[in-house]
Length: 175
Length: 370
Image 1 (cartoon, rainbow over the protein chains, first blue to last red):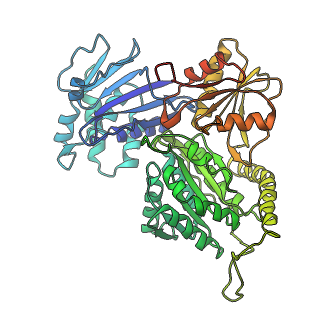
Image 2 (image 1 turned 60 degrees about the vertical axis):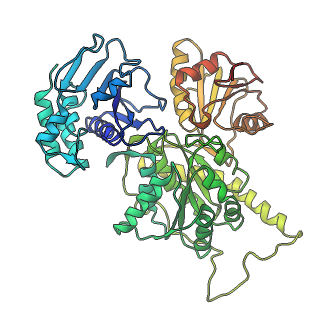
Image 3 (image 1 turned 90 degrees about the vertical axis):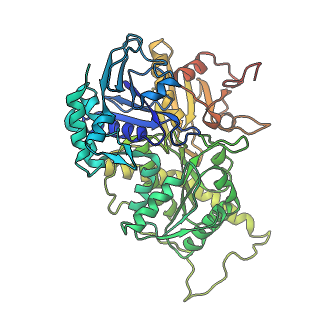
């Protein structure tokens, strides 16, 4: 079982990112679950959501404690949250950032999702949309196939800029 | 068609397939998404139900009763405090023999104010004459709602059915599920005692001491008959859609020395604990109780039994553990865990099994400091 924890802020679309990732994994023929951690969250507060991917039905409902992958959609949460908490020794990190940074020796993958969203004019109420471009980065990392990423995006969103942003993230991901 | 959605959306999708004539709706976390999604179906004319946004849960059930008594198929959804606010009408629905289907998203009762999963809300309604089923996955939530209409409306039953799903752990967790249209799987509703303006008669009048008990017995007789109706419906569902369900989902129980019994998502998590224990050489199995009413007969003789209760009856014990002790004669280890959404992992459950002590009750997380 492959376990992912997504860090973002309330309103940034972390829950939708989790659903898109799960849907893409299902389109790859796998089983997946996605769930947010529901607390007293509000817009702008740090939030996490979880995705599990496996070849067989997933029977675990408890929270992910030892993620294989940590996705940081908003790097500013790292000032207040230890995003590496519990990460497996072999665990990878996907950062939405312009420049790579050291994450306690874990393999770090960097892509400027915010820049891509702004470039594609992919915004809702003035905020860049990060949850569709991040699928391209996840496809490049081999978590899902790009074909399924595109299929999940088009099932949930009609605006073609979502797919072109995901393709840009696929091209621009830096390992 | 396989999609990925929350348990709430799956319940709404199943209601759309069942196409009730009337849906009464009052929002409450974590159920709200169910009635919101149904409202969207109705607004988009994908569902031709009369949608009644009532002013309280008591009125939601009253509206369902009023509609059901005319022979109309009805649905509502609630949770926790909402369920208890409608408690009087919950009793009425069963007493009037109305096949109402209700989804209840299991949530703890306050105070302390808490919106997370617990089964005490629905367990407190166990003596009302409603059938109760508890699901363990999003697919199962969808399937259970479809079957609930068939079972409630069967003339051998004619009792309301409550479909329970764990707050957040299922209501807000997204899983793949198959939304194959059900076609004619749910037969049209024929309510033999439906009111008819062309044939006026008394209804719900005073029932004296000479007759009341007979009506109560008739509820119990139907509750007993419901066991075979549930089995038939689940078998018919399997033949048609290929997904098999039982009163109790047994996992690796054939040669088990110790059996974990639980309800809802904890029952699924327990299966992973069983795998873990088997790797350690412990012959463990699990039983996930789906139907709490009618209560299933469990074959637990000669085994150690560990019962996990995500509920409690103060001054008595874990409701599931005490029910199992009373109906099987076994002396289970009773673990109270998961109250108010308390995190319980499969590793924790494996620990409950390793530390078992027949007859002992343990509250997970409670120490000398708590």
